[in-house]
Length: 155
Image 1 (cartoon, rainbow, N blue to C red):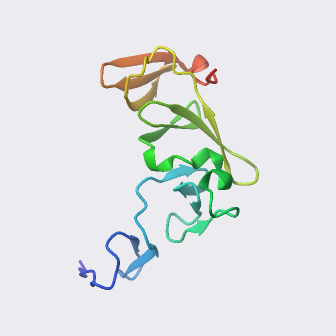
Image 2 (image 1 turned 120 degrees about the vertical axis):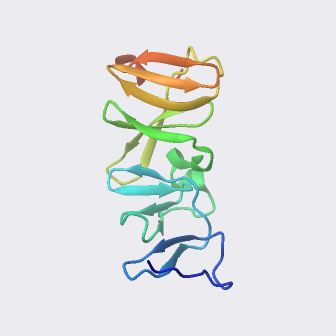
């Protein structure tokens, strides 16, 4: 096993990978905390994308001063609690919202806010699909909804 200390010249809050030779390489000069994989791409912070498993990152083309203008489906990735696949579709959630995520032909993401009726403001910890049901694990219990009703848009 090859061990290498990170030198003081390398920013400690950056995102790094270990390359095939065992070298630590900085790929982004700041820490990427939440990554959302969709198809063959990964998205972070609403304005970064990677198509090579995080070895390199590029800015999604658009107005670099506005994350919402770049990709409205990703403007809150830094508060994402988790993601999963339900009925073959990518779903992400924050503490109080659930969103279906679909990739457009242009490579950006569309976010659909899903109906939360029945959750009554409970903090969402996890989502799971099993035997035709979606289970929302919250701090106060487990709520279920059939997969056939799960993708109902929020009113």
